[in-house]
Length: 357
Ligand SMILES: [Zn+2]
Ligand SMILES: [Zn+2]
Image 1 (cartoon, rainbow, N blue to C red):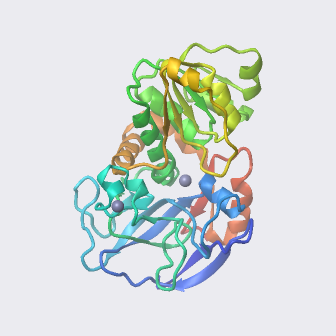
Image 2 (tube, rainbow, N blue to C red; image 1 turned 135 degrees about the vertical axis):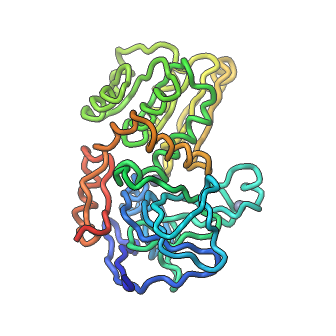
């Protein structure tokens, strides 16, 4: 495979462009991956529909799975666990490649590295085009967190590891001690659905879910939620017990306002979903003080969260119930259908499987 296909986003709302490019020439420290599959994350959808700004042209896609194909001179031969990394290894990798030396990296905020390369978010430059998942190659920059994954785990489970699943683990860490706690999860898309399982994994006592779509509420119950409500019900006639951990995945201000009504004294609220421009939300500061709330914002994740995500997806029986949430798959040439599928209410994740013709 010398020439290969990639889908470029040129800044035209709702459109991608299929292009044929030569095989990348690796620079020092880079690793070449042959992409097996890439899912279309909600933030890709926002970008394609111009609700978020990116520099164009660009290859989107940051939930990616692939096989190591080649190493540039001086490239790391180790994965994030310290094991050997070899040609042919099946891998996922962190959405942000970090320098390890800047102030943010020093404080453990590697996702905010001041010299970061962010997969699926970089402007394509001549000779450095392959930075996203919607292409048959992806070039990994030095400082990328690479995690080996077993061959027998389905692509549908592993692909979202490097955004959805790792972000859920990052949010759980931000929420602190989880065992025996009562959770409220607002938004039961792929992240919220994953968070239901991970809350159970960490020993949650009760998990309440707020979600507008009925089939997602049903799925939430299947995944082990204690109860699931449409947002309007909580405003009118449903009372919840005091919530210890409130995880906000929907990005909606009203979800935030409804959720905090039930947050207990000493409760923790973690905001994850608000990753696109939004209006200011209201909050009563006296309530924050008197109830001793902790409010955390979580954007992306660090290397340890990706390792935890892969461990969960590959070792936990629970994770198997996420398998059916990803699909159907498309070939890159079917990008119009894939983008239509991605915005259907029944879709959690759809994506591109590269060997599909
Ligand atoms: Zn994402
Ligand atoms: Zn850095």
